[in-house]
Amino acid sequence: MESGGFDFHIIFHSIPFLAKGMGLTLLLTVLGIAGGLVFGTLLALARLAPFKVLSFVAGSYVNFFRSMPLILVIFWFYFLVPLVLGQEIGAFQSVLIAFIMFEAAYYCEIMRAGIQSVKVGQAYAGEALGLTYPQNMRYVVLPQAFRNMIPILVSQAIVLFQDTALVYVVGLSDFLYSADIVANSENRLMEMYVTVAIVYFALCSWGQFQVRNLQKKFAHE
Amino acid sequence: MNETKDTISTDGVGIIQMRHVSKWYGDFQVLANCTTAVDKGEVVVVCGPSGSGKSTLIKVINGLEPFQEGTIIFNGTSVGDRTTNLPKLRSQIGMVFQNFELFPHISIMQNIKLAQMKVLGREDDQARNRSMELLERVGLTDQRDKFPAQLSGGQQQRVAIARGLAMDPMAMLFDEPTSALDPEMINEVLDVMTELAKEGMTMMVVSHEMGFAKRVADRVIFMDQGRIVEDATKDDFFGTPRGDRAQLFLSKILHH
Image (tube, rainbow over all chains, first blue to last red; front, side):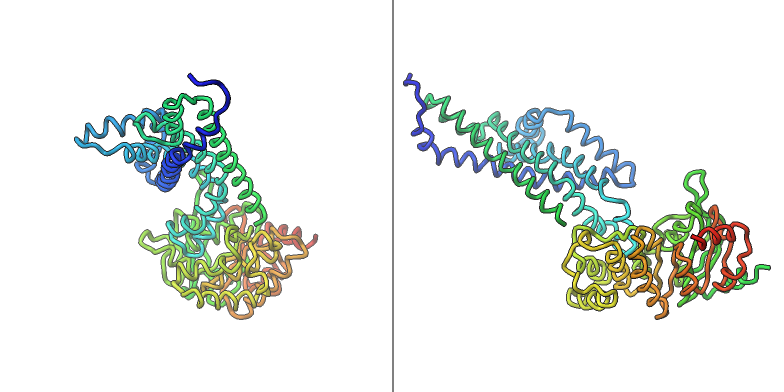
C-alpha cells in the first residue's frame, strides 16, 4: 500500500478514461430526458384526454412506474425482457429504455401540472381563433406549460443525471464506474471518489444556476 | 306590446339565429329558452346583472360552451350539430375576451399571425402584411415586436381585436371587452369598436358601457336569470324599457 498524501497525478493521468465515462453519463442523461419528456408529454395528454379508457391506462402506467425502484426497472429490461424476447437487447439499449419509461412517469405528472397551470382562457382564445385541439396544444398550451415547468423539469433532469450512475449494475462504464475502476486498480480510492464528488457537484450546481437564469429571463417577458 | 321582439326573432335572415336555447351547469340553468337573431351589419349590445347568463349567451354561438336544448345557426351552419366542423366555424367568428387572452409566450406580431397561418393557411409574408394593416388600424405598429406583458391593458385589448379581425371574420363577439381595463383605457378600446361598427361589422357585445350602446348599438338585449327579458331597438330600450328589472338595472347603470 502506498503512502497517504493526495496524488494528483493519478487524476490527471486518468482524465481520458474518465472523460469517456462522462460521455456515456451525458449521453444517457440527454437521451433519457429527451425520450422521457416526449413520452411523458404524450402520457400527460392521454391522462387529461376526455376518453376514460385512455386516461385510465395512462394513469395506471404512471402510478405503477412511480411505485417501482429505478434499479428494478433496469433489472427487468436487462434480465427479464431478453428472456421474454428470446434475444439480448444489449446493456446500453436496455438501460436507456428503462430510463425513458421510468422518467416518462415523472415527466407526465410534471407536464400534467404544467398544462393545468395554463389559464383556461388561453385555451378558449386558441379555440375561438379556429385552432384545432392538437394545434391549440402545440402552439398555445404546451409552450406555456413547458415554460411554467422549467425549474421542475431541470430538477428532474439533474436527478436523472445522478441516477445514471446505477448503470454500473449492468457493467456499463459511466463516469462513476470508470472512476471506481481506476480507484480500485490503482488503489487510489480517496483521490477518485473526491474527484467524482467535485465533478458531480460542479455540474449540478451549473444546472441549477442555468435554471435561475432562465427564470429571470422569462420573468422579463 | 312586444312587437320588436317578435319581428326580429323569427324572420330567418340573421347571420346569427338562436332559437329556444337552454343550457344547464348541472342543476343550475344558465340559459333559459333564449331566442334572438342578429342580422348582417347589426350591432347588438347584451347587458344585464352579473350571473344573468350574458357571457354564456355569446360563448354558445361559437361553440366554446355547449348547450343542451334549442338550435343556433351561424351563417347557415348549425353550431350544436355533432358533425359541424367547429374549428372552421370558429375561424369565421372573431372573439374578444374580458382578460384579453393574448398568448404571453409569443410577440404581438406572432399573436396576430398564428391563426392566420395555421388555420387559414396564409404564407408568412401574407400574414405579416395583414397583421401590419390591422396593427396600423389599432395604432400599435410600433409595439409589434414586444410581448403582451409589456403592453398596457388597453393596448393588449386592441391587439386582441386586431388578432380577431386578422381572420377576416363574418362577425365579432365581445365578452365584456372593457371590464378589466383601467378607466382611462376604456375609451381607446371603445373607439376601435365604434369604428368597426361604423364599417358595417356584425357585432354582439356583452357590455355595461351604456354610452357605447347608445352611440353604436342597433339593438339592446337585456338578460336576467338566464332569460332574454328585453330585446329591443336602442331607442325603444333607452326610451321605455318595459320590464321592471331592466328599468332598475338601467337606473343603477346610468346614475353612477
